[in-house]
Length: 341
Image 1: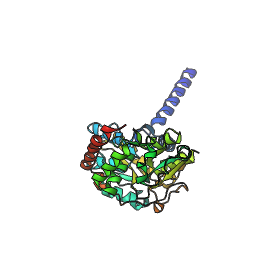
Image 2: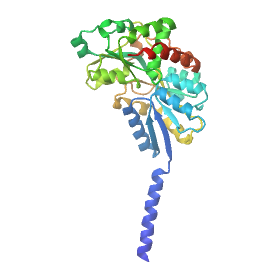
Image 3: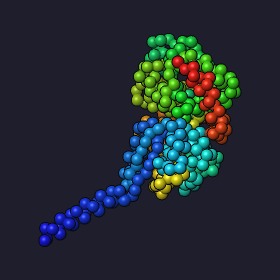
Image 4: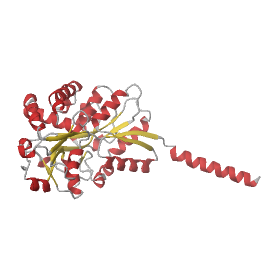
């Protein structure tokens, strides 16, 4: 009998341990940044809170489409990272939830403006300027023109050497499209993109893929956010980051709680946690060199600084509007995508 009760106690203890391991519940997260930082954030949050994170990595365009398709029965609780335009579009369409984090007073002005413009249905978590990275070894071997300006990307010596992403799936590429429209005017921008198409070997699904391909020597130039090019340089690849001489746009990587989230309280916990200075200061450990949104977070020495870059006054509200986005993407499909190499 004594042995019997000892066994019961042991079983009860094991059951209690198993229950406590999951007592803090789950969180369904979509991460639209590089997979390394996504995995790092997942591991850190689970360790600190005991909350089980079910994480999927999707580009921002893919995430927006998924959240929209699942609006009546959301499978996602929170969306972290990726360019701000799709987050603003989701907010505009009522797909995300208003939430004013107690961390707001610690954030940079650009992060707060992002939140205010969306009625606090999203918030800025990092920022980064658009540009490209080119392989300096290939540039010497193939003797193509050093690309320092948008105009240089049209040089015949770069035929087949450029990769950029498809703006339908990639927030990076949509930022590039919206940047060129704001720099040149819409018709001139599409004339430019039609000429650029002659030099583009591939339109990738992921925004960072073009410079990773350039790092491997598969192409000469990858049009990406500059911090993605810096990541390749930090890993020892012969990649030189470039801020285009005519001026460039930038992203405000954002975070949104999905309306109808099944694990709402855990989503809010992650939201507040991800805005902490100490959390954002660890991004460099994953070789993510964006500018953090918390004013007290450590800015990696490798991060491209806005004050060193000629930035346009990027209109997030106009180019985050669902109708404007739809119109530009339809025109890109018709005039560029249909004629892609």
